[in-house]
Image (cartoon, rainbow, N blue to C red; front, side, top):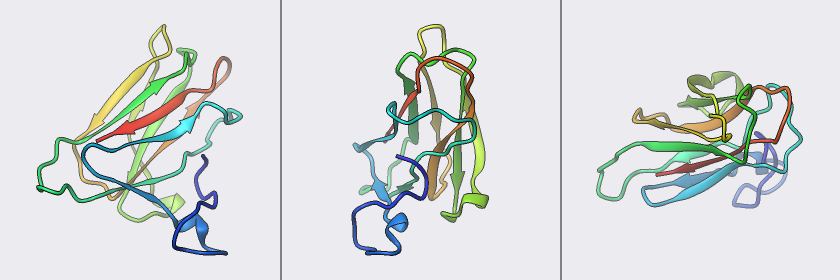
Length: 131
């Protein structure tokens, strides 16, 4: 799903782009599911980093799978305001020869998303997150 695309939830039309999933420890979510048409600079749906029930937190891990070409790069971005211009690249994942990669962020950004920063050929990467 792409950044800003309307989603089901509390904010009815015209603000369904503001409906975000909040993930807490034990949750997983798919940012890119591999069915998107790859385009340099495309951003995934954002997720909100929810409060850990016991206030213990070991970070949030992002996984790239799906056989993406090793020339592909995916930026993991964070922001404390869910506004496109406020996202900052925290790390860049470059898939290995099998098309897989991972990054764990132990920071405390309120929002996260993935951004396809370089793509030239091959499969659209699948990007998931796990807390």
